[in-house]
Image 1 (tube, one colour):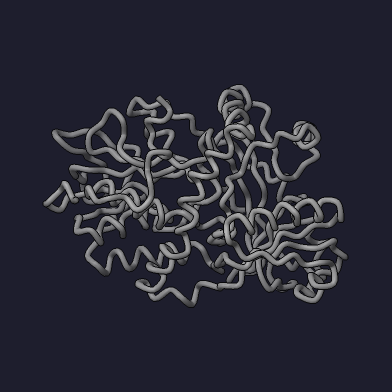
Image 2 (image 1 turned 45 degrees about the vertical axis):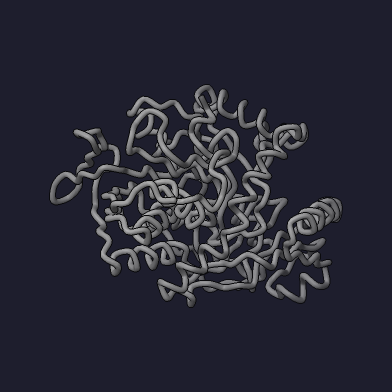
Length: 418
C-alpha cells in the first residue's frame, strides 16, 4: 500500500546510470524530478566502464585471500590491482574490513543478497531500452573470460560451471580450438575461455545513459547543471546550487558514485566507502573482437566500442584526486599487442581515468539516510553501477513512494553500518 498519496518533488544528485535510472523510476511513479550534475548525463564513471550488463555477476568481487595473489599485488607484479603507497594509511582500515567481509563464512550471505539485485538487471534494463528506443546500442551475445595457462583455465572453468549451474546462467566452456575459431583476431595461442552468454554489451555505455536521460527529459523531467556538494537542509526540505539559481525539494537522492563519500561526510556520516580507480583507452585501425574479452591473467578487458577497441584496467587503490599513474594501462597495451594480430593506434592523447565507488561489504548503499528526513542514498555499486542502476533505481523509487519493494532492501540499508 502506498503511504504517500501526493506526488513529491525530488532532486536526484548524479547523472550516471544509477542517478538517471533513479530519476526515471521516480518520474514513472508520479514524482516531479530534477536531475542535477556538473556534467551532461553519462560522462563520468558510467562512460568509462566496459559496457557490460553483467547478468552472470551473481558473486561480487571479493578481496583476494590467496597468499600468492596478495604477494603479487604487494610487490607490484599483478596487473589486477595496484596501489599508491601514500594512500594506504587512509585506505588500510577499510581494506581490512573488505578482507574481513570476504571470508567464506561471511561472503556467502553477502553474495546471496547481492544476487537478488543482479537477477533483475536484464529485465529492468530491457524496460528502459525499449522506452528510450535504444535497442541499436545493445548486443545480446555475451562476453568471454580468456586464459593463457591451462591450470588457470581448468580451475576457472570448473568454478564457472558450478556458478552457472547453481544460478541457471548460460555458460559455454571453450577450449583453444573453439576460442581461436570464435575470435580469429587472436594471434597468441590461448588455453581457453568461458563464454557467458546471458549478459548484454553496449558499444557506447555513456550513450546508453544519455538515451535514458533524453527519455527522462521528454517525459517532463528537468536536468540542471549544478554543484551537488552544495547540498544543505533548508526548512523542511533540501536546497542545492544550480545554474539559474538554487533548487529546492522535499526529498533528495544522493547518487554520486565515487563522490558520495565527500558529500555524506559533510552531512555527518562516516560510511565505510572507498574507491577503486581504473583507466581506459581506445585503439582504432586494429583487430576487432566479436565480443568483449577479459584477458584474465594480464588483468585487462578488451571491449569493442564505437570509438575502437577499449582497453580497461583492473583496480588502482589511490586517493580519488591523486595524479594519474596509468602503469596498469601501459602493461595492458603491451600484453594486448602480443595477444592481437594488431592493436591499432591510440585514439585519445591521454588515457581516461575514473573511479568505482565501493563499500567494505561489497553491497550498495540505498534507502533512507538514518538521521536526515527526506535524504536518500543510492551509491556504492563498485564494479556494477552500469549493470544495477535500473534495479536499485526502481527499488529506491519504491521506498520513496511507499510502495512494496520488489527486492528486500534490508541488506542494503545504510543502517547496517551502525
